[in-house]
Structure formats: structure tokens, C-alpha cells
Image (cartoon, rainbow, N blue to C red):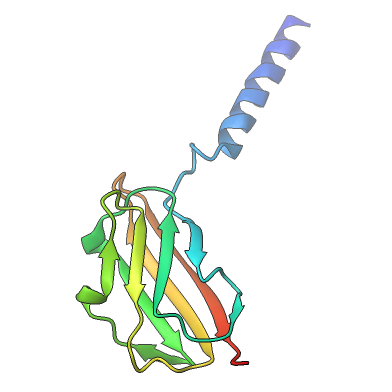
Length: 125
């Protein structure tokens, strides 16, 4: 009886660790402006991405597709805050598409890699 209880507790502990965010923590997107899948009236002048943990700026790649065409971004268009978690992207002046997709790949300061994408649409009134 004792060994069954001990085994049950051990399995429960292992199961909890496997499902824990801390055990599998990777940098991921926690918010954006505009939000994912938003439909907005005009192209924003800037985008904001908020990540779950500080990232290595030099190992971060951001790509914006506008109506399936990749927009070229300059380093000066990417502005990180002091925490290393928040990125502001100045949109190119020539961005007038209706369908946008932002893709990123990054390396967090803790060494974990992360990647993802989000999209939004522009529907003028």
C-alpha cells in the first residue's frame, strides 16, 4: 500500500513538472499592437511586440510581409526598451497593403530560442 502511494505521488510530481511553464519556458509573444488577427481602419505608423522575457537584440530577426511581399526594415526602425522585452517597429512610409504578417525568430537571454508570427488586416472605412 505504501509503495502505491509513493509511486502515485512521484508520478503526480513528474506530471506537474512536465506541464509546468517553467520547465518548458521559451520566449514567446505575450501581446502586440495591433493585436493578432485585428482588422483596423488604416496602416499603423508603428507596431509593438511584447515578449515574455528579455531577448538578445542582435539575435532577433523580424520580417514583415505586406500582401505577400516582404518589407525591408532598417535597424533604425527597430527600437527596444531597456527591459529587452518590448519592441517598437516603425512601419515604412510606403506600407499601404491590406494584409500584414509579422514573423519573428529570437534568442532569449536565457539561451532559449523562440519564433512565431501574427497577422492583421487593414480595411479602410
